[in-house]
Length: 411
Ligand code: RNT
Ligand code: ZN
Image (cartoon, rainbow, N blue to C red; front, side, top):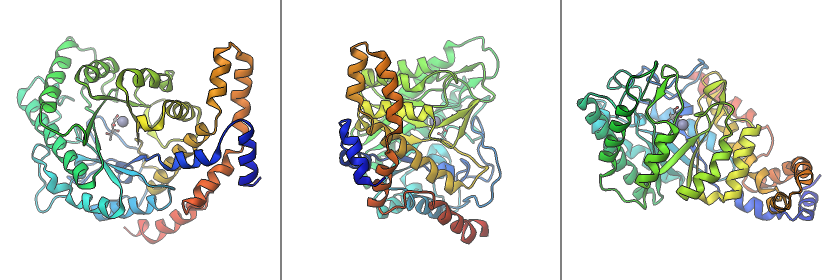
């Protein structure tokens, strides 16, 4: 089937494929730098710890800023459209001595800003509350030790300033996401105290002056982590309450709920009460395993909700890290899969299906929801990819294989 034929077929169910192509082109996805080096960063060679874990030892990992930038460039060159890049504070670029987290300044992120400027990509940011000796007994901002809290509060404040710098320089608002690993392995005796301390620490961070138009703080919840199975301070309820009362955004990570929970179902409520929704797109397998996202039912459901609620109301960031496969391929596949699911959602006659729901026509609703999945979205994808100078099919893998042979495996 040609694009023209697909266009006609979609037109019969009221879908304008040209609009879908245009709309998809306007969605910027924030690509996470940390898939490139297993959340390693540039401060030490120790790798990720304190609640972050990667598995796999695939060769070719980026170990310097130059390598990570080159890999990001290569991955972005195989993804249709313009996107954003999401950095973590542990990716600061240090001269002779590593500047500790509480003393970070824009200086360590200047090379990243220069890199982003040249490519016309926006940057998002994250304070790094892990992989550091000041995570004591698994706690950061909620630690009972005021010195530990102070260190991490200073880190949070430093990061708000860095985010503001990035946004100003790149003339594009910077989303800054707060995720802390804080929690306990076994039943705590006091569940309230750590949450009170967490709220107090965050309040001290957010009372810093920052431009609310340029810096968009988001706050990520989590049900459990490896080693913190019994209690996480920043549970879903805590994050919802804190974010709502402080007028910042709550962030949904697809891996941070019970595995039978439908994360897509949460989106409409978030939208109603926050106005905008921040998202970490991930794929949990049996736990918060952060596998590369596939075109599966969970991603489909999330993308459908995102499109129905208006893509402009979402901050879409990817968050997974697989060290057992080629890291560059993992980026490209995940970004393309996200785009494909958004496109499928844009090609669904949602108004018609909604009308069936409201009329109580549940048989027709079920049948058509399924039948419309078979409409030729691939042709529209191919057209979208071609118009963006990309090969629509799997040939990008050949380019990655060549890059792997020429660059990655020589490291
Ligand atoms: C961890 C959170 C968090 C991190 C990144 C690296 O469970 O999902 O978002 O993955 O900040
Ligand atoms: Zn996340």
